[in-house]
Image 1: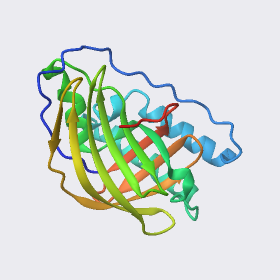
Image 2 (image 1 turned 45 degrees about the vertical axis):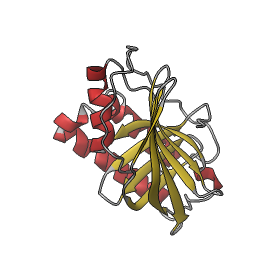
Image 3 (image 1 turned 90 degrees about the horizontal axis):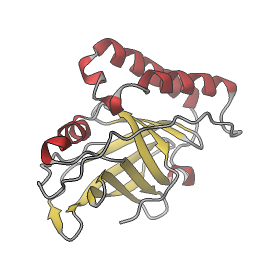
Image 4 (image 1 turned 30 degrees about the vertical axis):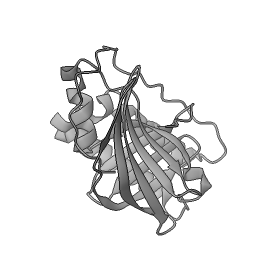
Length: 211
């Protein structure tokens, strides 16, 4: 989903190693043999892509990943992905969204590194937060209201944005609205296409992010 481009203040000074991801093999009953094969192929393709940074410079790899996502969409066709199972804290594995990738790539210029990049969704409360963390104390998040539009589509509208450090907070003007389709969803993995033709692959975090 689109996020506002921001410049990170020099207040953040902590330098951290790049986040590591562990792609767990799902054994839940909701994952069939067909979907397991397709999801493992997708996870293999994105495993070394640095959340999409390397893919930007490799159109061949991007095409292969998009093809794998299309396969996941076929596997997930006909399923309902906008129910309660959509709620949770989802952690970015790979994306084509330029705004998020810009922040991830440029964060070291401001003396920090991007940590977890998250989507926090609550279907019942009709809320979604897009979150980029800058450990140990920094975070940028955009709040959105959402509406369920169809079995796989969610409409969203940004409502507010905040850049927060250890002892300070800066409100930022939000802008934008649109929709995204969750084309595949199981207990651990979610694959998304959005209004701008961008793609998002996230896994369910082992923690719940809260403001």
